[in-house]
Image (tube, rainbow, N blue to C red; front, side, top):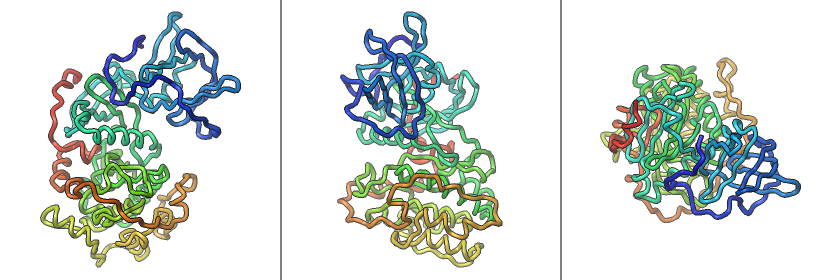
Length: 456
């Protein structure tokens, strides 16, 4: 436990002078925790009723209501002069201390906040992958001995570009929304003088790319199981207003060895919140061979870009090969852009082939939405045990109808698509390393020599 504030400059803190935000909240559904606590601000201590909803802490006393957005606030356990255990939440130069039954409160808040005592809670075992902005370590929880994957960001590298910092902040925001068995989520986050540590589940089974390379094409029954899981997980991602934009076998991880019955969608480094105006941190991104054609040619796009990428995965599973194959990235890019796919001689029943073609429609208006896919007869076949349970997800209005969003004129391109898109070279380099964290973090460059002292 600690009795003093952090002595370093946080990436996520601004010099705030007020702990509370100027807003009100009338609806308290989906509350993570609520109860009576003793609140201390300065020298004053009062009994208050606390509610936690997502990244908001609501404090109620009588008819008064105060709300604070605690996203990326610093949090740690403390003891007061009477040796009572409490939680301290720090926003810039202002803070709130809460006392009482704080163990559960801390466990709820830590997902939204930043902790500062990484070396006390985790013992780093080994380096698993190196990247430009982050390395991935295997670490052991010092209390439970459970293994976790730790994505470690070098703050000096992040601070070189405001876009890199924005990307990290967005990725954390998205990961905190993910609460689904088939989707990678965030467990907790730490920050020190030099690093940011993102703690996630340790997946032991390798990625779907390596599984396909080992076993070749899959049976239709096994493909049905895989696609059912991915539709389920992707449907949840979209229900949170998020587009993944990099669905591919390298980002689909088996929870255990050789078990494709339990897949996890990973790597939200290129994900973003959907907006109708197409105003994204990175507009044109993805991996050549898997990206939807509308992204490649610079058109506006919606959630259906993920449907197309999932269709490419579907095709790869049933054939053991990708539909767009070229000698280099440029050739793959051009073939992907044209979107001409050979559907001849696939080992797939008629209804499965129908679904595959609908997912890979070149025109987004003609392409199936996930709402339509989950109603397709191939996924609802009763002679296959796997099924979808998607009825209770609250979808954005744009997804409920099952139709497409009307394309709008794309804003002027600000990035070179071939620079933003991941290359085949990067993919081959990634596969030499740990497969859970694909994309921008697994390219073999970067040097985290200062971290070696943490490794046991």
